[in-house]
Image 1: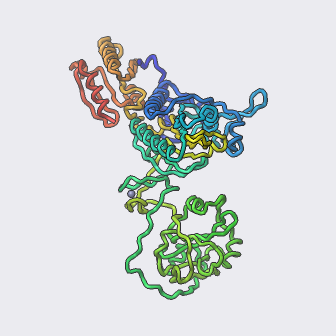
Image 2: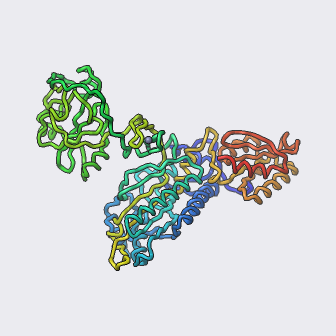
Length: 570
Ligand SMILES: [Zn+2]
């Protein structure tokens, strides 16, 4: 492709509207342009990268036996009312009416449409399992669309839905999709992690997120360098603490005046003990019942873990009035001793503590040398601590590390949530009617392109992984007014294209400096230069974008050398 016949409106300056690197570089490299908040046009270069990602996804989904369909963007409200999501989805659902006043939405996801299709067409166990996928535009009316393609209102997605006869079947489908996603992101040339995730508002029993690792990612994960366990910070489990050998003997409880000392730091400084020797008592209201949560002084509570453990619909800290009423003391001095009739949930990490400090349920007073069993009964133990870097891995006990990532894919086991709500059933071998068991699997296509840039760039621009580079090679002809250089360049383009290599030929009448800068910004994995001293030696220059490694090859061998290199580099 000749650059003079192409549309790549590169920008010298950083656009003011761009907040993240991928957004900035995609604007600067002339890949996308903003139409309205959260709505973008792909220009030819951007669309080529997107098409490459889509191509890898399509190939792997087909290989996994999934069937490609194309479902409508416009979705009638009746279907969404069947699953009660018309009301539940809230303002993110882009709604509209047709000329007859009938309600529609622009689909943010397609469970309703696809379940409607399957309930009509699938009647027998012989038709299952089935996996239907599409690559389609989705809409979500974000309050604050930002970060370019990362959080748009209109965005590209591959979504797939599996339909199985039973739990065993959906587990197999889930495992197949998990492996397929792993292959997809490997083939995109990305460094990623599959993490256990909270299933969130789509609802379901089990899910994993696929995260592209990048320092600029908005999601925090804990990663175990020992065994590869990785989880969302929100969801990360922690290994149970080991019992301390030769633990101290229980000392008698003492009541100590701690005037005005409320925070963990204040109390531990005042009593001259470490914050880890304090057990704080947090009072929460879970569906109108007060629950006391015991946590080590230097640890933080993960409310999601607590909410999931309690199976509570609503959860929030108890009000100061409520705390006073339940404990008899003011906020900041609560403790488990004498807290009769209140459910006490103790975090696993305090299980083996002895002779610790707690509040005394009275103003300006703490208890020292408190012990489980002797002084109060904690009937329940749960992992409710907010996981953090350094916490032991739940699988192998190695210290976990905190990394950042960008979610690009998500797999859910849905169960029968949608098939029950919409009546998607089949007859089994014994002619018994059963609900179809579903899974759903998404990949943000534009998001994957953006995440690839977040992970692969430097101060000069994008560094494309070879498999998703819009062009694998950029060829610069240094002086386009020299006919011999143009002829040599044209010949090379032909040779590379014969080998199936995508080449962008910068045949513009521009200064070399401008061409080099644009080539770095656009980020093709290999750059070839024809002209200057090397040409006089009968050679062309090759440079690898990622490493900056340079070499030269005789003109006649350039195409073969470049093809070889593309097979070797990342
Ligand atoms: Zn581990």
